[in-house]
Length: 67
Image (cartoon, rainbow, N blue to C red):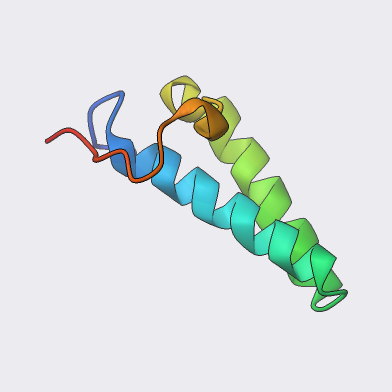
């Protein structure tokens, strides 16, 4: 993914997926180590890819990725 152009939607999607996994694990009181790992990975990727550091809650539901 580092080779993809800045702004590639898959970067933000990966960050979102990791954050969702961390949140779900915490809410279900399951897999605490996985929750921490996913959250740390998401934070690291947000720093590595500034274009993926967006507030996904501001997007409309089912917003398509641009090609």
